[in-house]
Image 1 (cartoon, one colour):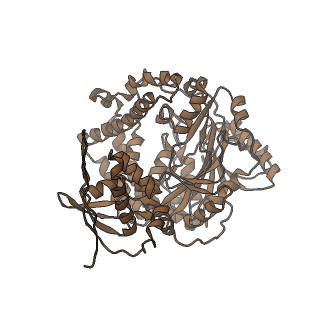
Image 2 (cartoon, one colour):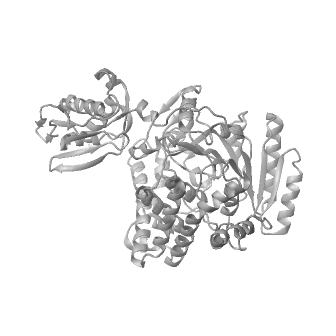
Image 3 (cartoon, rainbow, N blue to C red):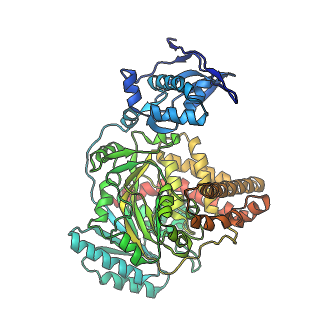
Length: 619
C-alpha cells in the first residue's frame, strides 16, 4: 500500500515541576479522495471541524485514527493522538492549537510541534475544512414550497381560543396574508365544544376548518382499512378519560391528516403578536449553544423590553421549514448580517449529509416558559443570562418568583439538532415520517424530538428571532429546593432512544422508527434489576449534570451574589441528591414503565404503515 511518511523529532521537555511527554513521532498518512489545501498558509487560515473519530489501537503507543465523514485515516503515535483528540468543534488551526495546549497543560515551547501535527492532520483529512463539510449537503435546488396550513389544538379553554383567533384576525388584516387554519378540538365537555365553535364564528375572516375530535371519523377509518393495527390506532387516537391528559392526541391527528405536507402548530394560549427579543443580532448563527433568558416582574415590563415587530410569523416559519440544508446554508450566507458558524460538537458531524433538512422550526417564548414541575434549565444558565444577571442583580429573585420570561437566541439560529418546542408556534415538516408521542401524559415535544432525531440523524431546526407571547391561564407549581423530584418515565424513553439510536444501521427513517420500536418492546420485557439500574442511572446522570452546573456557577466570581444565594439551597435539595436511597426515590413504579415502553414500542412499529396510508389518503 502506498503511503507518505511525515517525520518530526520526538518532543520531551523536562521542567522543575513536571515532565511533558507527547511522543510525537513519524506516522503514516493513508490516501483519501479529497484534495489537500495548496499550501500551509491556506491550511492555517481555513476553519476546520474536528469530528468524532474512530480509533483502533495498534500497539501500546500507536493507533489508527479514521475520520468517519470522509474515510481519511492515519497512523498516529499516542502523543499525536493526544494533541488531535484535544480538538473540538469548528475553529482555525490556531484555535485548535490553543485548545490542545490548554487541555494538555503544555508550555509555550511545545506549541510549534502541536502546530505541525495539526497542519499534517488537516492536510491528511483527519480534520475537515468548513467548505468540505458543507459540501456534503450537495447542490442547492432553490425550489419553492407551498404555504403550510396552521393547526391549533385546544381542549376546554374556549376563552383562550377566542383570544388567539382575535389576534390572528388582526395579523391577517395587517399583513394581508391569508392561511388555511384547522382547529383540533379535544374538549371533553359538550359546552366547551359549543363555546369553541362560537369563538370560531367570531373570527369570520379566517379560513378555518373545525375538527371535533369527539366525532372525528379518522380513527374508525384507519381501523377499517388496517384492522391488524387496531390496538395501535386506538392507542394513538382514542379519546381520553376525564382524568387523562391527552395533549398528544391532536398532534397525532395532525401528523396523520397532514402526512406528506408541512404544517405549523399553534397552541391556544399564545398570541400571534411577534415581539423583538431583548438581545438582538442580525444574520444567522449555526450552533448548539444554550438559549438565553431574561426574567420580568410583569407583562408590562416584558413587553417594554420586547417591543412589537411588524412581521408575519407564519411566513417566517414557511421560509425555512422543510428546506434542504444545501438551500438553507446558501440562504443563511445571503442574509443581512451574514452567517456565523459557532459551536458544533464532534458527534453532530453526521448532520452534514445530503439528506439534511430543516424538520422543525420554532420561535422564542415571552411569558410562561412551558415547564411543568421542574426543568434543569431553571438552574443551568447560559453565559448570556449570567452576563445579564451581572448587570441586573436585582432580577435574580424573579427566576422563581415570576413565571414571565423571555427565552431565545439573539440571532436566527440554524441548529444541527432536533428540538421541538410546542409552547407557542412551531413548524413540522411532515413530508417525511415524524415520530409520534405517547397519547397520554406530558413532555410530548421532548419524546417527539428525541425519537425523530433517531429516525433522522441529519435533521436540523431553525429558530426564528422573535417571540410570541405565551399567556397561560393560571400559575404553575414549580419544585422547591426542599421537595423531592420523581423523574417521569417518559424521560427513560427519551434517554433510551438517545443511547440506542447510534446502533441502528438502517438508513430509511421508517425502518429506523420500527427498529427503535422493537428495542422498546425488548425494554418492556427486561427484568426488574435491569429497569431499576436504567432508571437510577438516568436520574443520576440528569441530576449530576444540574448539580455540576450549579457548582460551576457558585465557583464563578463573575456570577452575582444574589443569584448564588438562590442556587446554594439546591445543592442540599433532595431533588438533586445522588445517594442510593435518593436515587431510588426518583424512580417511578416499574409496571408503569413497562406498560409505557411496550405501548410506545408497538406504536413506533406500526407508525410508518399508518403514516404512509394517510399520505396516500389525503394527498
